[in-house]
Length: 429
Image (cartoon, rainbow, N blue to C red; front, side):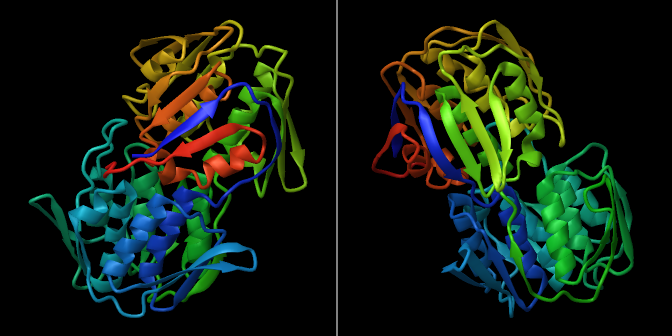
């Protein structure tokens, strides 16, 4: 399997273009199931996750065409005729979010059989809320041998659904199903992540009737069919935040382009508090830091949007490893999301974990070592730490990184990072 080697100590200077949001693109791809007309997505990231979902969509008979357009990478999806509504385990297991094809298949055809997604290394992420929402919309659900069989022979019906807690996946799934349901659906305690707003606005452009976008109450008036459209995927706020932290860690001056800094305000506020210069630009944000000036330790606590994103927790912890003082990183979204701590410790970080809190005592120097990625965001935190670690850091299992970061070595390398990929052999999954 591939690994990434970083020689620490280089400052970063230059521009890093932010790719389209993975977490938005994969739900927009699922929306293509809902119409027999073409859906063209521009600003598309080319990642392992979008590739996996593309394979699954082809399984249903959907035409998937990737190409370079006038404004960059784009993908065309045309679900003219659905030849299958079966999503096998071998495809669904590769990416949890592919489970969200269940609702669109059910809404359009009245039936679907989709594998349960299986476990997750960062804690329990059950699909109970997804199934409860579909049941409320009139679906008949059966669980057997690891598969969900869902039927709605007379179509889905609008319903009032109040989620017991905020769930991004369940909100998106219910939204994808409700747009073709008969009558009105109200989703209460809906998640407000920008990717959900992006999906809702795209569905509206396809002819859906959705009120309350970007609030915690979504009202959907079902329509009989949707049309195709062209839609630009929003910038990836997690990639944006990760490179902002990388620039702050290494020092120097980096402009993040094709970016929307308002999407990571909870992160940049903490970076400014720690001593990083953050300035808006015409098409993004400028991150500047003199590495001779040591950062100050600050505390963070993850929260649902617009709070501090759990997907940026590991990266920010890496930044705090060399800050002056002691910082507390509190994780409230996922259990088991401190698996990167032992790997950071291999680089010389001083971190103690107590239940859902990590206490980071900043050290003056990190030292390069061999480390192993445990999940997507943890792998990026190790790359960030490697940028300043003395000597060489080698990050293994970078197939995690390839799920969510497009051309990472190229983007960091163009700004002066000494980073390279070491090709491996064998099946890394």
